[in-house]
Length: 312
Length: 279
Image (cartoon, rainbow over all chains, first blue to last red; front, side, top):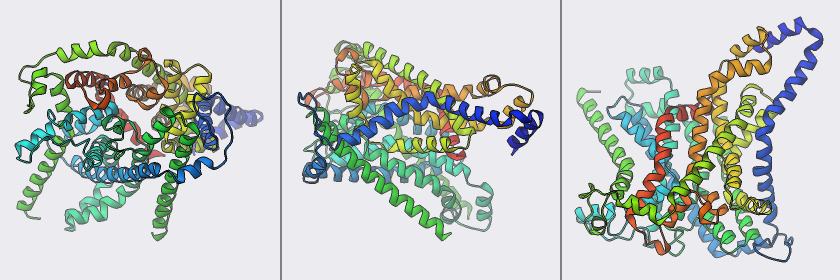
């Protein structure tokens, strides 16, 4: 509103120039955007479209003959590729298995950090640490924790009389859960910070009013905190799901997809297909399927949110 | 609510907080402990939290086994260049996103959100082919280009929030006083934005310093590789690893981002929130 008054004033001063001034501002905006827009188009949007196009070719690395269009052949092969669907199932299992506990634990931590507690500063500082660490280091660190002999987990198990020497990361049954724990640990900070921000936006007065009215902690959470927190919670959960589904480095370092493919996430599968076996076209098709699934998940999520909006 | 239940509630809260502290801290403490242990202690079947004979041998051995110094230098060059370029080109665009409510700003915001959903395979294969044709494969320069674009969404997001925090009235006042558009930007807006720009640059630095996937694919020869890639060489084949040097190198690789994060933690979370809350 203030800007219109200012423009009105300058227009009054120099009425003939106002139209040209507006044009110059528009051009100026483009000029300011261009330095970022060009690299985005060349190195992000362009490759993305190129990548989608590659999915319809038989592109391979180190091949002398030229690349040919093969239409939907890659997708037909993918449909029959049991290993790919295995990895796909593992990817979804992992994404849900990490995202849900991550959210619940982060919510608990955010609620605690929103209270006036001693040691809160320490918890806040520690809650950030996993965020700052390279994923490779997080993976290495947890491998040290999970070590069969020298790891702290087995030593603790021995001390508690639960026996030791478990090969957590190489056992067929324990590998995926063990990797999921690391995923939860690594992704907690962003979720906690986002939820904490959401909490700090909830009106304190409402909370106090509810407390005076005699509402217990659970009721106050359900009727005051959660409605205010919900938009942030849904957004961060959707993002976490996508990030987790697309994740690579953690599991690459922890198990490299083993044992026997039990932790082979789709990204690891596609990476191997592309850069170990040189099947670029096929790997690009996998990427397309992953994008499609994420798009569908997001669409369902958005539809769900809009539906709720109608109810209110 | 009786006083008794309140005390119990408090106790429960502290118990929960303690559990969180343990969960968050123990892997990191274990990493540090492992880094300072002697080989004999690492081989013991009953590992201890505090090394009985703390030693720096693991660090020395880590530097002997892998070119850590060189890899660190590569990481530093890649991360510093990427951070500087990203901030220089993102700041004007973030400014437009925050101040002009047009189709451009909407498209840019949309892209920032959508870019979070790309599976990197779909980007890396074409990038690999293009960079290979440009002979920019296996070069830190090529990696920097990728990192710049990769860190742009979040940089735009953060900066967008910081620009919004600068009251538009200040700029208008300067305009009324007769300052041109550029003059207003340079002498009024930029100084107020400076802390946010620095925080964004440092965050972009950490992002690039920690990045693994693109570096793994794009850098083939050992003397070009960045720190995260070289760290995985410690793991060896079949997961047999020399635990001490592995822990020592991993610990060292984390220090720069940890220190920076500690310094700008408030600004990062603030920036993330400013971008999220105000849009």
